[in-house]
Structure formats: C-alpha cells, structure tokens
Image (cartoon, rainbow, N blue to C red; front, top):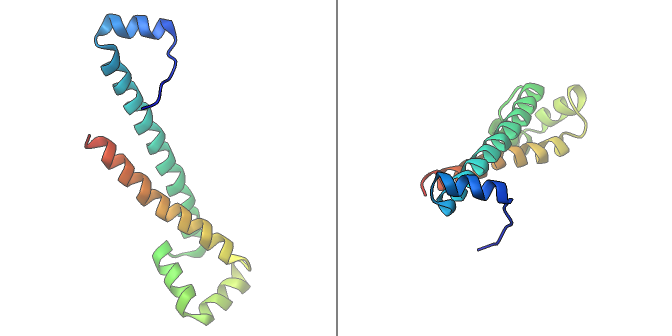
Length: 110
C-alpha cells in the first residue's frame, strides 16, 4: 500500500461528510474509472481512424496482410508504403482497448 499526501482542506471536508478512508477510496475509484474511460475512448478513436484508412477492421486487416501478397501490394501502392508501422500501432490500440476494459471490469467488480 502506498502513502499519499492529502491537502488539509480536503481532509476537513471529507472527514466532516463521513469516513475519510471510505471517501478517499471512492474518490480514487471514480478518478481511476474516468481515466480508464478516457483511455479507452482515445484508443477506440485511433482504431477507428485505421479502420477508415484501410477500410477493414483490425482483425481482417491483420489476417489479410499475413496471407495475401496481392493485398499488401495494393496497400503499398494505394494507401501507405509503411503500413507495418500502422499495423503495430493499430494492434497496440486494439489490444489496449481489450486490456483497459478488463481492468475497468475488475475495478467495477470490487
């Protein structure tokens, strides 16, 4: 468990309103949920941009570039010669959404 400093004015107000530890736990939980939701939104937006750029979802694109040489040539000629960089970032976004949703669910269930 970590120790953090809390400004006296917050301690006064939260203590007057009830159990200080419970109030802090609730505040940190809400803050964490808000931050995770913002991260998921950001990653989904990036994922959507790649879907629009390549006209496929991540799974379909990933599968096609691993199996279809003609598709790769088409992408290199008409969309992006460095599609591998996009694929790496797209994978990060796609898997990141899954990871953050899992963390969100864990927090919500506790």
